[in-house]
Image (cartoon, rainbow over all chains, first blue to last red; front, side, top):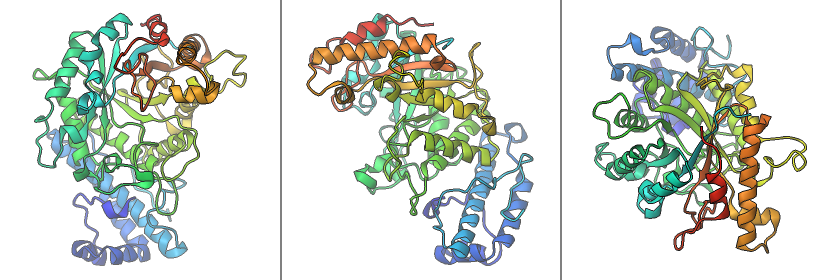
Length: 117
Length: 372
C-alpha cells in the first residue's frame, strides 16, 4: 500500500481513527491503527460482510456496481494498511512494505481474514 | 506445440503520440498485407488522449480512431495497449534512475478512479456490440511492462511493490469488463517484461514479478475470468537462443513456458480464456523479437549489418519453428514482433528505420510464417 495515496472511496474508520482520518492527521491515524488492530479489523470485517463481493447482476446499473466494487477494494486495501501499521508498531517494519500473503486477505467465502483469525 | 500461433506486429507508441508518423497503422498497412500478419498492436497513450483531468474522454481520440478503423478496414485484429500515465493522475516527480513522471503507476487503480474510467471508455468506444463504436478492438492490454517501465518498483524498505499494483489493475479491468457484459474487447495483461536482471529500484525480475501478481490475486481469491488472458513480452528467449535447436539449448528452459507454468500452478486457480481447442492456461506473447544491440552483445560487436540481419532472421525463424513444433509452444496463443520500421532506440524492427526503411532479412522470414 502506498500510504500517501490510500483511496478511501468513502470508507471512514469509526472512533478515533475516523476523526483523525477526517482531520487529515495521517501520521496519528497510522499510529492509532497500529495500536488497535483488533478494533479496526472487526469494523472492516463487518463492512466487507455487508457488501460481499459485488456482482453486476446485483446492481441497477454499471456505475453503482463499480462504486460498490471500489468500496470493496478500499476495504481490502484498508486491511493491508491496518496490518502494515500493526507490523510497524510491533516490529518496526516499514508501513509501505510488501503485502505478506502468507495470511490471505479474503477467504474462499469472501470473508475478510484477520491476522489473529 | 502451439495450436494456433496468431501472428502480429506491434507498432510503436510514437504513432499515436505523434512523434513518429511512420509508426501509424496506415504507414504500415502494406507490410501487414505483404507478410500476411493478421494482428496489430496500437497504443492508447493516456497523456495524449487525456492531457488534463478536465479533458473529456473522446475529445482527443481522432488519431487513435483513424488507426483502429484503418486496421479494421484492412481486416486486422487490433490489440490496444494502455500506455503511460498523465501527471495529473500520477505524479510530476521523476523516479529512480530518472524514470519519467509519465511512467509512474496511476495513483488510483480502483474501479472508480480515472484509470478505470479510461478503460471503461475504451471498452465502450471500441466494442463490437456498440452500434456507435468508433472501431473494433479485440483486446485491451491494460499496461505495458510494469516490471521495467513503470515505477515505483519497490517500497521504502526495498520490498517489491509493482506486482501488487499490477494485480489490482488486473482485478479492476476484469471487474469493469464483467460489468459491461463480457463483449469484445477482452482483457490482456499485464504485459510482463521478460527481464532477468536482478530486482532493483528500477526493475523487477520477471519471475519475482509474476509470483507477486499471482500471490496478491490469490490473497483476494480472484480468479481470471473467461475473457482474460495473460500477456507476456518475449525477447530474451529469442535473443539468448532459448528457442534455438535442442543442441543449442539442452536445458530446454524457456521463460515464456516458465511464466505459463506459474499460471498453471493450482495454487493460483488461474483459469482465463480457455482458447479455441488450445491448451490453457494461455499466454499471449504481445511483444517480442530481437534487439540488434543485444544480438551484437551475444554474437560479436564487430558484426556487419548484413551479418546481424542474418542472425536476426535465423533466431526469429528458430523461435517460430520451436513454438510451432515443440513443447515450448504449448499454450502460447500469439507471437508478436516489435515493429516493422525499426526504432533506432529500440532496434528490433523487421525493416530498417526510415530513411530508407528497407526490408531486413527477417522481414521475408516473417512473411513465410504460417498464420492460422
